[in-house]
Length: 210
Length: 210
DNA sequence: TCAATTATGTAACAAAAGTCACCAAAGACC
DNA sequence: GGTCTTTGGTGACTTTTGTTACATAATTGA
Image (cartoon, rainbow over all chains, first blue to last red; front, side):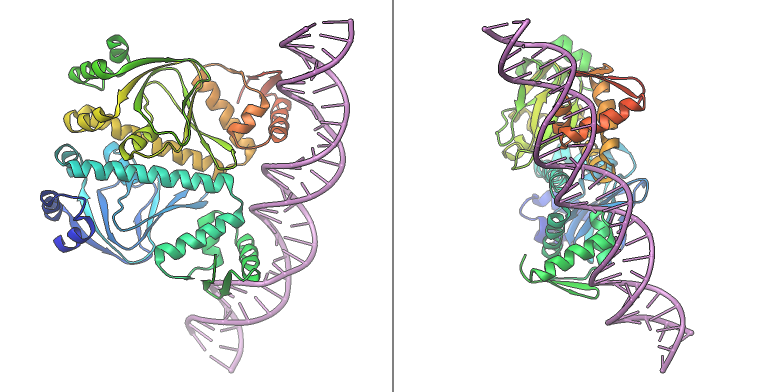
């Protein structure tokens, strides 16, 4: 575990903190598609992401979904911190977008380290800030952009986090992420294909130039 | 200043911290309508809200606006913290919705107090959490609700923060806050009036039962 | 192999929201 | 009082997005 920690966090955490994390943290391998956190659950620990991508979603009471943002290497889930500290239920769902390796930190250590390690404080604040900015980004998208632009951004972002210009999604899955309908997404994708920007296939989409 | 601090924050901050705040903080009276923070600015200090309401807005490159949330007594601006820590430019605009009394804290104290005072740590985390939740709320509104429902929520919330069932806004101002157009808002307001839920007048709107 | 399931394409229509144009009332200013 | 500005009302139309319905192709699996 120390190896992975040093590789991912060595330049921001001091050695003593890395040692502590290795002692109290538990390693978890999470296969693609697994649910990490469900809306309404209480959270038991805070995840430090070592590798892979986690997708964070919001859902309304009718079951309508919306993708908020992705978490990548070096990120942690601020929403989770929020829940841990406040002892409230999760407001979001987190799903492994790819196979994920992470280290779970017990909640009580968070508080302790915040007082003890300057680097941990910076990390926690940084996470909050990054998350707030991601949320702003999400708001910008929904409020200011049309579905065609949102779709393009979605395809770009998904290709980026998966480091693969071929997206293995169905139109229906994309529609869920963007909180739209399958027909609308198919329509817009077809338009992008006609513009020569993507290539559509059953179960996957190839990005040519976006 | 000590009086106001004790009244507003006495039950969450220990006496020593209150003392420190009083020493390094500067009191500011901000009249309704003043801009507190503009997008793109660097932030000089962190505001502790004593009384009044601050409106936090987002703007896209085309100048389209959107109301994100209100800050009330006991709140601070997490977005500001975010900017202070990271030395980045503000992503949001803050405007005094009513006359506002606040205490500005120099940035360097934030870090120091986070290590020193447990109550300050809790306060800062709480602020972040509240703000993240407000942002989620904003996203829910835009993503999952139609304009008529968003308008009703807007009227309710505005009446609540101003503690006044008569809103002193023009249809155009509401349209800006909701990122819609005056015509659309007039139309929906008229519908609400016909349902007996509100009463429309020039320059103000009376809420009857929402 | 062949029926069932899943994914996609598309036309036709409906609903929500935005735009344009113009009018009229209220208030401001001289 | 009379003109100008601001604010609100409304009809007609467009654009965007969502819905319904149905067709067809690919894949699965008994």
